[in-house]
Image (tube, rainbow, N blue to C red; front, side, top):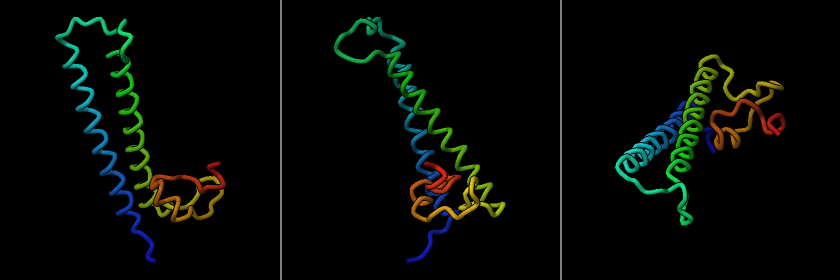
Length: 113
């Protein structure tokens, strides 16, 4: 079994995060545009969530996705400095399985817990 190329691993994760940001941005725009011309009193609708709640939820998900992108940028920097895959706390290697699951991981499983 070959070890995945770290650059490819980070690039694949980055592409996923960028797609998530694009999708969430479109969803946010749709919520805002959809609420612009309505006079519905959704704040008192017992049947579902409010527009404000949906908008806040998408904003929080977008913030998380942008944070993930920042973490991937930091992982790329660690790759360029030769420290990618090395635990920032104990200095031991981060397992390939952990890096496959979390390409921007800064700590090994023992130090992360």
